[in-house]
Amino acid sequence: MGRADSEESAPVLESPPDSPNVATASSSEGNWLIITNQADPKASLPSSELNNLEEKRPKLELAQPLDDQGAVADLAQTVAELRRQEQELRQKIAVLQETQSTILSDQLAQTQAAVERMVQEGLSELEQRKQALLISVEQLERRRERIRAEMRTSFAGVSQELAIRVQGFKDYLVGSLQDLASAAEQLELTPQSEPPKPAVEESRSPEKTPTPKFTEQGFQEQARQIRKILDQYRTLPDYYGPPWQLRRTFEPVHAERVSNWFFSQGGRGALKTMGSRLQNILIASATISVLRTLYGDRMRTLIIANTPERLGEWRRGLQDCLGISRSDFGPERGIVLFEEAPALVQKADRLLTQKQLPLIIVDETEDQINLSMLQFPLWLAFAPDPQQISTYQY
Image (cartoon, helix red, strand yellow):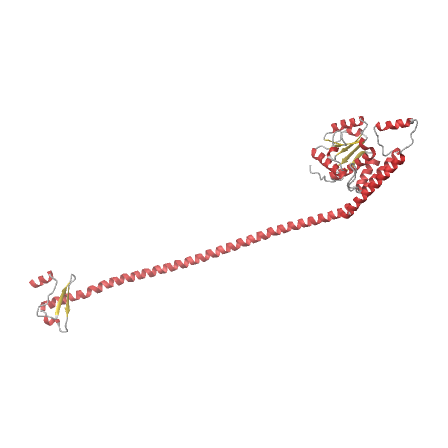
């Protein structure tokens, strides 16, 4: 018992001095026996020590395998967990790839649809612009043909227009020389001892107020002169003539209206409008030009229109057709513009008192005519056509 107690308290085993082939070592887990030769160690040990060694040997041999089995189990469990995570990750990757492919497919389909829609909208817009351009081209072509037709009928081309101008200037010079020769032939170069009494009456006759009556027999000479002037305006227009002479193309329809006013209505009546104010101004300009040729500066023109814009259009049109300037418009000049009828009537009365001849021209837009204007010897009104839409903008 005493030896066993000593071995438990001191785990180091010492070999006896007479046993050189056996060595012992101690540790906290137990004791290990190291044999250094091939001889049976049991032969050199006591029986009590051999028993102790036999009891401790299984314990020493089983300690290390138990620890290795736990580590292996843990490692196997870790590997299984990693494999499970790997499977989950693979599944997630597959799901993400499928989702990505679906999203890409949807986005591609939406992009294609948007591109197709944009292309269709662009094509439709281009088609609309093409149609608009085709319509504009067609309108321009029709306008070109209309202008060409108008040039052929009215101007007969630029070259013919120049030829007409040159011929008109030539005829104007020839006519002026002929009138000058006729006037020289009619001059009485021999003075008379006693001027006859009719000469005195003739000197006073210009002071009387002229009362034109173009339809009566006594005015046949004036009628022939008027027809001659209208024929000259129609066949030989003079675009560079003197002021108060018509400078625009005068068509047969215009000449017919003016002749009707002179010879059928006796210088007092209404004419159906031509459809535009410029055409009416052309007829009025021809009438003014003829009367200025017959009566000179004694003929005064009074025009009435109810707005300043229309009066301005009359002023510009008369300047263009008659070759006059702004200085020819005014209360004491050739043409006077009025917006109200009472002022025009007062001016016409004063002109008659001054032995002058007023010509009253009424614009188409005047719905009502003052009856006081009908008492004067010359008045021309343009009546609107009920079957024709007016082209006036104001």
